[in-house]
Length: 495
Image 1 (cartoon, helix red, strand yellow):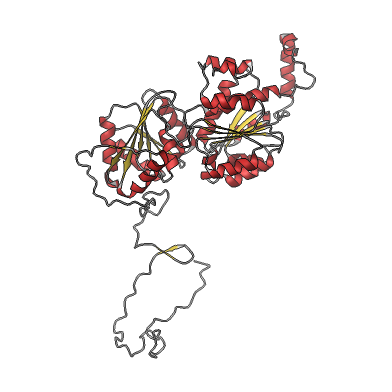
Image 2 (tube, one colour; image 1 turned 90 degrees about the horizontal axis):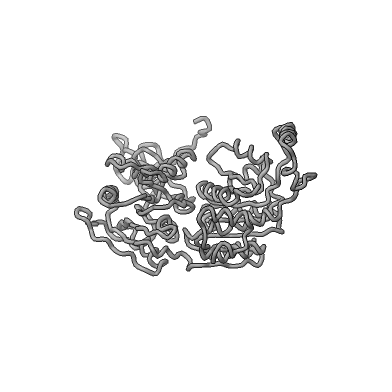
């Protein structure tokens, strides 16, 4: 179906035409007419199929149709007034001070990550450039001052991550009582990231008489239950089977020991003709270690994960989009929402513990009709994770020939739980000291280390019938006779 047949208003049809869009994707062709008709909708489509345009275009269209007219200002006034009158009107606006009466927020889009929120905001600017609608983005990790300034001047449409949105609501900078359309983008990821309590609070702050849209690449049962509660008779749009990867991605797996993964990655990157390459690590600390290793081997690399500042994340992404992109090493924060063209290779340095995440990772390549390659490294303890991925996709990954010097020797585990290495390995912010021994769990679930054995005092009696030299109770033939005395507890408030 062509965009001209979807019923979009002229400003939006002109915008997509200028962007070179002619034929709508399946998710756009099915979702846009239903949203324009005012229906609630739950949409499921694989990554890279145009979900963002599927809800931003009709959302903007509906907000334009319901924009209230300004008081005492007919639509033709601006065309009839002279330059002097226009200047006087601008002066009157400035004389109101820094706190003009803001526009009410009529559209709210919730996104799980800063990168996805920024991408949605960019789409709104492109599609709504021929209208007077205002939109802004708010997310954490940066100063709230510019965000508050934009909100004070009024916005029609707000894109937000749940945490920062509630912060600004609590501070009195955001009111949601006028919201007409509420959008949950990547709803399943927001639940995976623990945003459900925040989403419930936000849902209670917006009017019940609203249009609600829910979009995601996967739609597990938990999401459907929430949709039944928050959406009213939603139209269901599903253009591909849940968690199906793109057909144009060549997928394969290398069996390799965990300790040999850095050298295998280096050898493949040096010896493979490739374009933009994205490497996924399971942990933040692991991503930083990979970058340092690649830089020592003469490869340009950058990391992006939750411990990086927003400025560092933005610089890494801009560099990755440039003419000479570095190898981008990322955690699953980059598994969704990155719409970067010409990513030729995805390398799963660590297999994800959630099989659906694998689908999102490899969906960063083969976008907009292109083809891509997805390589995965599988250590012995990750065989169970590989089986889960293959079971989800109902196919087996092609096994790459073993390269010389990389014959796997680790025992194969069919479980799905990955052991965490001690110290700081695999974790961010752990202890840097050497562990004294294996960590045991008390009944409370808190870790404690085994007590060090105490040396016996010189000259202590060794006979089983004698009392302890430390003055313990005399032996009485019971099992407790030889136990050391209990030490008296001391008040440690001043320690």
